[in-house]
Each structure stands twice: as C-alpha cells, then as structure tokens.
Length: 475
Image (cartoon, rainbow, N blue to C red):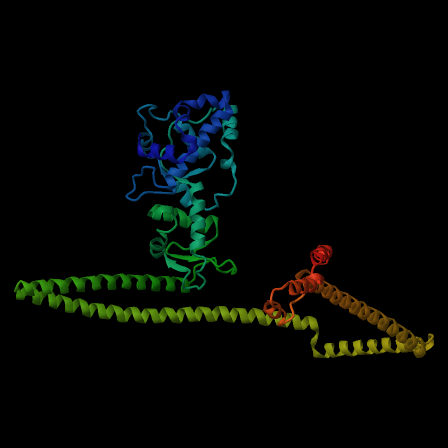
C-alpha cells in the first residue's frame, strides 16, 4: 500500500477497507443510476485528496512540498494511489472534473491573474450538473473524464491557513510591525501556519498572498511591499512611500542580522583553527587564521554599528507613526467636541436654558404654596398621642412583669425539685453514725444486760425488723 493510500486509510473514515472496492471502481455510471452513491463516492475522494494535500502527502514536482496546490501535470497522483489489490482508481478523473466544474479547485495561473474575487459568481461558477445539462441540450455532451492537467489551487485548504495567519498577526498593531517586503513576508510566515511545523512553499505563499489581498481584504500589496491592513482605517488599502521605506529598512535590518550571525560563527571557527594550528606548531596557519579573524571582527563591528543606526531610525519611524495616529485621534476628537458644542449652542444658550429652568421651578413652588394655604390644615392632638403612648407603655410593663414572675416561679420549682432529689439520695444512704458511739459500744463488756441494751439501741435503724428484735429481747 502506497504512503498516500495508507494515510487515507488511517485518517479518513470514508477510506476504510470495506469502502475501498467501491471507491476504486468505475462508478461513473452511478451518476444516473444511483445519484446518491455517486455523490458519496465523489465527496469521499475530494475530502480525502484535499486533506492529504494540506498535510503534504500529495506528490509534487516542486522542490518543496505544496500544501495549497494539487499538482496534476503527470500521472504521479494515480501512481501514488495504485494498489496491488484494487489497482488504480478508475473514476478519479471524474472526481477532479467535478471539483473543477464546481470551482472547488482552480487552475493556478487563473487564480493568480484573476482580477475579480473568487467569490464573484458568474456563468462559470454554475454547478456542474447545470452546465452539463445545458451542454447536453445543445448537443455538445459532457466534458471528458480524463484526469485534468496542470496545477490547481485547493480553495478549501486556504481557510485553515487564513485562520492561522489572522491569529498570528493579531498583536501586530504598529505600522512598523505590519509592513514587510515580499521576501521578508515569505520568510516570516512560511512556518507556523500549518500543523506539525510544516513549511509553506513559495508557490503556496504566492497563493496565500493573492487570496488575502484580493478576496479577504486583509493585506495590501503592490508586488514588492506587503502591508497588513488596519480594519479601522479606510485609507489603508494602498501602499504608500512610507510603507515602502519601512519595508526596505526592515529587509536591510534582517540582512544585517543574518550577516552578524554568519560573521560570529566565522570568528569562532577561525579562533578554533588558530588554536589548533598553535598546538600543531604551524605558525603560518595560526597567523593566517588570526589575521582572518581580525578582519572578520572588524566587519562584525561595522555591521553592529550599522544595525544600531538602523534600529535607531526604526525607533524614530515607529515614534513618528504613533504621533501621526495620535494627531489623527486628536483631530477627530476636536471635531467631535465641536459638533457637541454646536448642539449645545454655547454658554449663552446654556445660561438661558438654566434661567428658564429656575423660573419654571419657582412657579411650581409658588403654585404649591397657594394650594397648601387654600386646603384644610392637618392638625394632630398631642394629648391623644401622649395617652396612647402611656397605655402602650403600661401594657408593655405588664408583659415584662408577667415574664419575670414566670421566670422566678420556674426557678423556685427547679430548686425545690433539686432539694427533693438530694433528700431522696440521703434517705437511700441511711443515717450517719454518731462519732464515738461505735467505740463506746465496742468497749462495753459483753454481758446479758449489755447485749440487751445494744439491741434496744439498734431498734430504730431497721423499722421492718422491730417485731423480730422485740422477740429476741424477750428471750
């Protein structure tokens, strides 16, 4: 399986293996027998080829891979799609003829030289089936089904690149940042607009530049200078002498920067060569390397001086451009203030308006005073207010006294309950022994009389055993 076919199978669900026999077959007859199937196969091929072109999988004769262009000058596309199992796609010519007829792909030279926007609809932009029907009615018949020849711009692939370009240039606000020479523009934006760090070819950049200037009105160019237009300025569509000067200055600064990098590397290399020659005891080579190093250092110093001067000029240009914008804003602000002051009518008119306002407000106050004097006066009996206030105060005092009394009673009840609980605990514990009584009882001699006396003393401790104790005493 070729690289292109392998890419389509892995990245496009329409090219799953079960669909490959249908896509590689000659489905041209389905145009009338099965229009839906024909349209599905054509759409699958177009979507797959456009995606493969954008990601750089379509073969190209250019030294660099094109991403916005289909190269159909030879059979390289058919060969790259050839499969041992299915052969070559038999209806690929029909697919690409449909794309040309629907203006989805345009011949490269026609795209670059066209004056009108590609969005302008003319007879040539009619859908293919309408054109085909008209040709058949005229007895001419449909166009050939062979693969079209030449290079064709894929319009669908321009949209993501334009979106990436807009995002990349959002922060370029000053005039100095938005102006480039054509070569500087190509070097600046060749990378970063495609996924996976792919690089736009020179032809891709020519197509992008033409599309952004003619069809999107994002850029302005005269063929040598490129300017990113400011949407807020209507007069920013033409390249001025100032723009050309800025572009030339930036181009020269970039060239000097590259020369400085080259000379810096050259000096490092010569220094290493001189050291190596010294280690090898090669005096002639060492002196020659040091002499070349000194010349390179002199040139590097001159380049740095020139670059510094150019950077100073660039800073002055940016400052002057900012001043121009500031003056324009101040001029427009002055006109706005003049217009607003004219609408106000000047200080005399304002004073007159305020005088009339004060006069009308005075009349309103006078009318209000007259109405207040004519109407009944609203009087309030202070005695009734005091009596009602005292009654409300007495009622509030009663409520407070009742709440306080209820609180005291609840506290007394709580204390009484606590006292009863403690007494009950004491009764369960029994009476406490009298100090010295136990020792006295133990000291008595145990005789019948003393035993009887002891029993009599203990009779009040256990009330339930009174009868039993009495019986013992009797015995």
